[in-house]
Image (cartoon, rainbow over all chains, first blue to last red; front, side):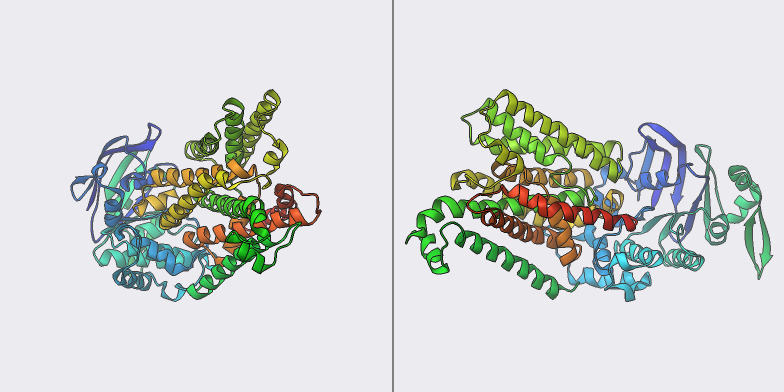
Length: 251
Length: 327
């Protein structure tokens, strides 16, 4: 389990967010919401050790992040970056990279690694893409391969930075359904999302970031009812009941 | 691409390199038959001294320099995730050139110091680029432009040294354009050892290169120590380019074109890239050198000219191809 304690994050000593206390609970989808530039991605990167914290601590099962080697971090937390390069390799070889934290030198894949990769591709719905070149895949298909790579790391926590951006609406819903399924399987899933409606419908916990601080951590219902979303985004978020659940919209 | 096809194509590249080397040994003002070549290599017959003093050093030099520059280019392109980067475009070659020029001007007798000076110059070029990439998070085009600026600064340095110390580089134009005349085995041995070791090391670090190609954040999140690995790989690229420049001069284009050809032939993946670059670079440079000797015989063009004549159009074609696709 990953915890942030009094964490300040930012670039070159300039904090973007200060004093963040947050726990990514296993079995839950945590969605980070906030206006552009509020520090959502920076927070994820700091939680993963990609950026040094300016103050405070990141704890992995109680152990400070700084005392862990990169491979140890990579066995506990996987990351789907916002900007993804597209190398000229087959999807299956791409997913095999997810086993890197488990390989010793020289890097030889064991039968176990291949089994895990096959499972991960199935979980991500990417099995039929195995032999395709990454460059020939559509955005939604590449996303599945990247997800499979993250799953092949077999981590307790998975961080996704804007996994729905650039995807058509069906793929957006699929990503959210996958996030829910992973959480149901016991993983802690944390994702950054710009689509308020999609986020509020699918999150277990909403983390609202604005004006350099964590404003609120609560269920979507309570965050909605507090009106904090309206203040943070400067829009009116409303909801209607439809087929027994809430549908959110902005105006 | 499935394994067998990659293996077959690698085999073809290897065969091409072998063929080029054999042709380079046989052809020249005094043609040798394969039988004479075989005998000559064992020190017998008429061809023995031609081989020992002229063609063997020349061919070995071409194979080594071609392989070194191509692998160096492949590493640089992968690590910087930039298809336009190469030892000759980002100032690594000209850095090595300045090292060589300074060394031969200031320490005229110290021939063994030349490869080290070349490496040092190349490494300074690499460090500058690395700093730029880390600090500014410089975009691809900025990196290349900065490399061009760096290259011309280093070249100006070389010109200044040559003007102030006219004796520093005998055959300066050969050095500047890149040429394989006047090689001898003693000059090739240290550079050859460095090149062989660096190519092997690069092959051992292939998985790390694969990860770096995914972008530094993703690489790090997969457990790679990005900074040290990137520095080690670029140091290897600098050592390779420096070793090649120390005896072959400022050869452009091999390091730029060959990785592109290899990626087309073999697909992505760093292990096949490094192996393919070594074979393809060796074959290409050996063939270009052969052409440079034969086309205007008895006159000889420096191989750098032939390479640029062939490489320039290819590079232009590449630029226009890349414009259409989003990167």
